[in-house]
Amino acid sequence: MLLRYNFRVYPTPGQQVALAQAFGCARVVYNDALAARETARQNGLPYIKDGELSKALTEAKKAPERAWLGEVSSVVLQQSLADLNTAYRNFFQSVSGKRKGARIGPPKFRSRRDSRQKIRFTKNARFSVAAAGKLRLPKIGDMKVAWSRELPSDPSSVTVIKDAAGRYFASFVVQTDDQPLPELATEVGIDLGLTTFAVLSNGQTIASPRFLRQAERRLKKAQQALSRKEKGSKNRAKARIRVAKAHAKVADTRRDWAHKHSTRIIRENQAVFVEDLCVKDLARTRMAKSVHDAGWGMFTRMLEEKANRYGRAFGKVNRWFPSTQMCSVCGALGGKKPLHVREWTCTCGTIHDRDLNAAMNILAAGRAERA
Image 1 (cartoon, helix red, strand yellow):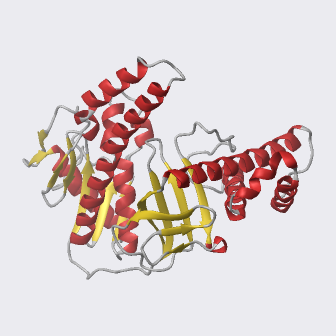
Image 2 (spheres, helix red, strand yellow):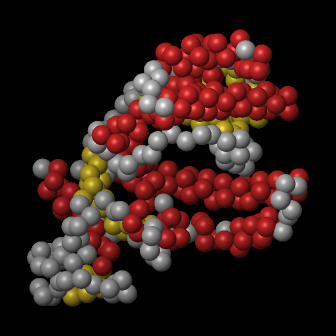
């Protein structure tokens, strides 16, 4: 199994200049190759193959107007072409119906103003972790890394990322073995919501943290300060970074919270079942901000990934399954219920909590599909 391990890195001012140059060169190579393919398409010429783009890059480095491409690692430039090829491959597979999920558009040109800049080094670049724990990159030097844990194996590649908040990260791709946990007899169904983030079929509840709502006042002030700054000024650039840092703090806190709770649920249960919610459609309603703040998609994705890694079963119940309408005791359908109805009584006399009853129905449906 391939996993990514992300660590914060702290380049020196000189290394930040070298990284900026590498980001720019990778972006230029990507845009040049994309422009060549778009020009060929508009003129009715055959599709330019990957090998031809690689040869064109070699010739471009010899030209005086592109001589500065030779000042960065050649692996970075080749990986930029590989990113474009992957983008085209995903687009073609999406159009032909071979790729699942939402439809993907054609590749777009990259900009220096993009909120995320990245470059990738493979083993051919001969990057390494120095004895002092620093990350050694060709033509950049040794960068300080904030190691939070050890890498389980030698990385096959490392991606250096600069986010909108001006922070730098190193993302290592490593090969790991599955780590199955001891088998348990417990299984759980999860009903996700907004008032309460999750209700488990065993009666446990997880309160909704609402990280964005809690930081809304601070974000509002930072955004107002940004809007008052003159466009193109240095103060506006500083204010933009303050806004980006505020948003990054909310996103990091939400991600850390989701990791902790998803890990606990996977460790305590042999099988986990959730409802296949259409977050994209729910985000178009008046509850859009709360839906995005909840992070249901990220949470369920973490559950699925960790279940595969630790030998647990994971399943999604059809979104049209009437988990809220059905009685978990007798199976009778009680009809649709408005959101303000939190308890209801079935014809069999059972008094149901809306969310707990839905979680128990999700568990039953998940067991049936698994069988």
